[in-house]
Image 1 (cartoon, rainbow, N blue to C red):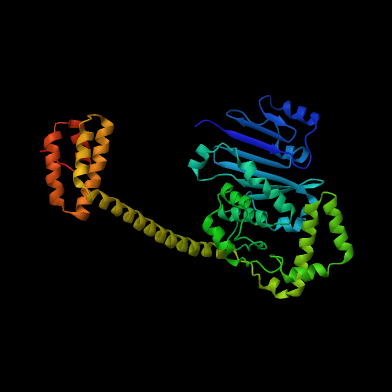
Image 2 (image 1 turned 90 degrees about the horizontal axis):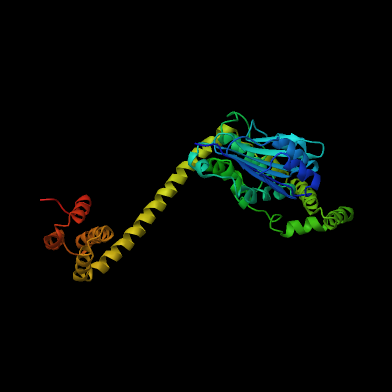
Length: 385
């Protein structure tokens, strides 16, 4: 199998300057370079540069995919989006790691050795950026679910000890966004493990839905804090405003209901794995029910179709004779399928004896057509004398 690597970088907050584009061009004569992106693929050799260094200097998002079952997502966010303690709680050995620069966090999600060989045999990397880049906006708005998914990828990959407790469970884990579902797919996170992790997810509260509790909190918001949030909105920093307001809202919720914080017992990896086994059993049972239902529906449709054939057996045999007389392979294939259906229709609505009699009449006329006979023998409709 030949080597394949795909690199895509995107600048979101600020476009590349002409000088920066020239620097990148000096690293690759084949790459597609625009003021907001760098895209290249390699069938031999490697990128002439360090992706992490490029993230520090130029870009806000990076996708890497290699056909040896490896893929990575890098996102750069301003340092004030998270504190170090928050990020450290979610870090793993390689599935989710954090790099710090003077002004930014560079968040890295990685799958170093997938077992899904079919996926990476077909994977070319294109399309992932569009699916995963929205995660950056979600993070900047204070959504912690992508961080938890990175930690869960570490559990799925066997990086975390069974005795380790999970990090703080973010709300909404059972209601992932499209980008977060794509991250689950990108990182090959075990679906049963994800279901297990989401067992403790709380339903949306009144505050989440904009109910009376949120109205009461807004009414009590100090004027200076409200003005500060409006100023952020008007100066193009809506994500920062949302993040700060959400943080204050959550703090207020904890004050109103201190039991919420104490009721969130953090499970160990071993406990999550046990829950995942239970989730897997439930899933298999549900899939079995769905299969039986689908089989019953197919059987019902099949029987309905066979009854239409039984409504005019003579017409069906006439059509089979006409196809056989065409003497070509495709027509013989059609005859075989038609006779299989007729056999089932006779079994359902008439008798096997009657079908055998009509088939003998059919073969008396067409039994010298070797290619047709071979097909009917293979379908176990006819036995050679």
